[in-house]
Image (cartoon, one colour):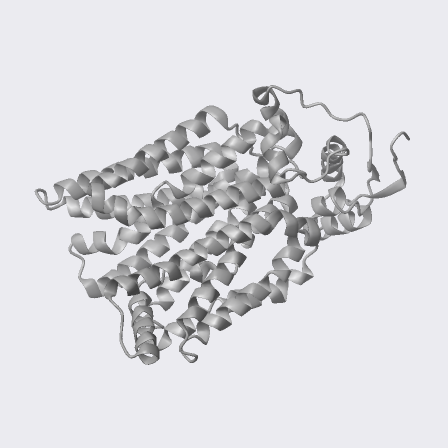
Length: 484
């Protein structure tokens, strides 16, 4: 992932950026602007990232069909180099516009990556490790945020003169990705089902599996290919109109909206104020924030190493349920802390609990489920739907929360608590466990709920006859053709 350093606002750097905006406006027009105008400019700077993310998520279906999963990730890196350069040079050029445009461009890349990376990993992973590998993007996002929090310390790059360098560091992980990723093969499922390149599929599987026998995996992909032999990659409109995937679509909508409306962004927004109310000295709050970043990483690792043991449903239900309890706890502690002093510390514990619950479950499993609930033909459109709703909800929370907080105060967290509870109940009642299941088996589990029979076409288009060879598997004497 290339945009971890930009997934959160810049904390203490926000003051430096506002000062830069004000000085630039003074140099251009001779007079400064009000604090409200500076806040509006900074709010645009922060929120434009989510707008770029929305645009990027809407481009996913077209890009992955044209360039493939790996190809899309490699080609889109140019966006980060462009955006990082604009932000890094903004101070030298005395241009606030370069910061805003740079964040918009890197937001587009994040919108693409947050959909394509889980899709790519879900397709190259063997089914017994799909959960573990599918949660790796959320781990690296947590690690990226943790690193950015460390680099943002005053002793590192948290000084006023260093903020342009801090903002441009996003190009570093992008350069590493661009150096390594081209050496990896394309997704075998994409090569077989969309490019119809049998030999490239076998070569890619051999590369990813080493000396493991790939025959059973080829047969599983062929089974899915046969069921899709008369179906092209669907558009978003076709996805929404397709009754055979109705409950999968509803599930993606619920978990993606619920992920953002769980209150996690509001917690990140309000963390410093909660820590200050708890009596933590202001100079020490930056170190406390870094500690919460470390908790994110630990919680993400717990989810990653337990998902193949306990399954997807328990992590989602437990994560949302625990977040709901902690959101209610924050409301209670904020109301009572005036009368009961130790309640200030309860609020800190609840903040940590919300972050931990989010990273263990919803943060990674949401994107993994989007990959698992759909077959190859419907997956790109599903990621477009899930990704766009994710970014719209992200923007909505960031925009509405300050007003919600001014209106109802601490009771705003009860709204997040209710949403978390509803999503947990939905997952419990509707979404089946997908651990160690093939994509065809998952589709069949939803067939009855969708009111359709998951029958397969009689045709055998593109089926590949396999024979064992030294633990691999190779092309047989012929490929079966329709009507063969």
